[in-house]
Figure 1: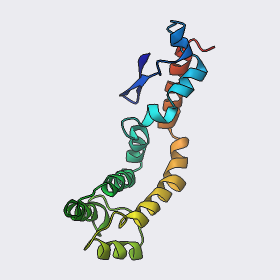
Figure 2 (figure 1 turned 45 degrees about the vertical axis):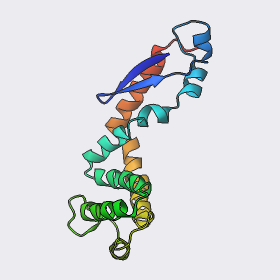
Figure 3 (figure 1 turned 30 degrees about the vertical axis):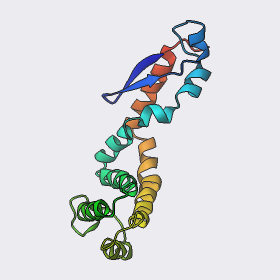
Length: 168
């Protein structure tokens, strides 16, 4: 069974597994257990990237943290040394160097360490900065997100979506 849910103007496609007990009974309703087993909330919300959380981060002018974290995840997958050098320099210019367009909040020793490492970058040369940014999001932004209007709207939308099915 395939359906869609709209959250903050973004449409997410929800594909429930074909072995769902509700589908086997040829009913167009989804039981709560099948909904959770077939598609977790995380999959629904983040199948196209962390759109909702990133939307919130934009409101508090800290979306560069999420952008940097995602860019690091992508960077780690680069196998070519030549491409890694190029991408490391881009990440440095965009997020690390002082006065960068999307400068992240990291301490000077970490910044200096990255400056040295990008001369011959490895897959993990941004790991320390990535951990710091993750902690900023986890400890600072995320608790505020949970009490934000965006999150409350999300919960309301998801609740309405789930209740729209005749849950057994």
